[in-house]
Image 1 (tube, rainbow, N blue to C red):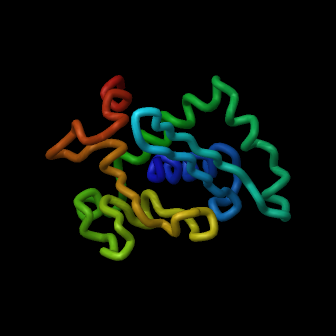
Image 2: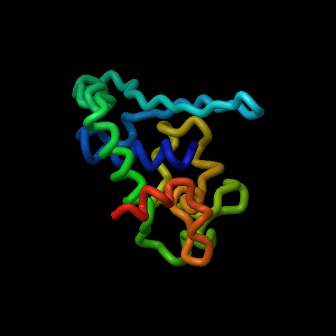
Length: 142
């Protein structure tokens, strides 16, 4: 869920015109039989970025679907691959695997978990294990 939130933030910066530092995430996750997962992406800046207004409009069904699909498709590739997708670029203390500043990391002020616990491969899979990706079916419908 955390990596998905970052991918979506990066996509929304392209579609809405916000800087990535002006968007923030809030994750809502619980485990167990009645587990749930949700996220909130919001702007909390007092400057001109906070008044653009395009972020709220992106929640409309005809815009949200393409934004999610664009975020997942963008997460398939990183300019630091194959090192990034194999987890060779992340610091061990971040508890992340397939993640770097080129693909999933956002400014520290935007992330409630300080860019830790990220793994792009859990979204899109890896060449040697494509079924690992949660959104793999979406990517196969090209």
